[in-house]
Image 1 (cartoon, rainbow, N blue to C red):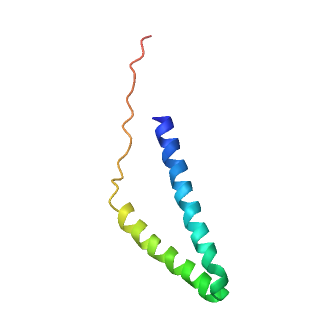
Image 2: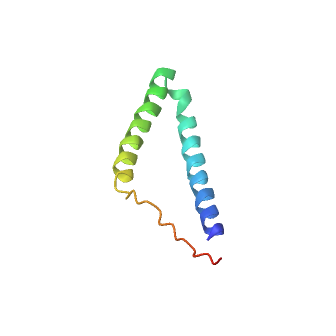
Amino acid sequence: MKSQLTSIFLFTAFVGDILAGLMASIYPTMTPANYFGLLTAMMMVVSVIFYFVAKNYDKKKAVVETVPTTN
């Protein structure tokens, strides 16, 4: 399980690096204001998506089992 989570983390880092490379390649063709405005717009879109995904999570309290002790 630990190696599976590590591989998922590394894959998301890979995808992020690819996207960052693509975004960096368009930087010379845009003004800085337009480039950073585009990054801000992308961040806002992802934030809205994250909001709708995150609100579906249940907030359950952890069940703590007590172990009977013998005296």
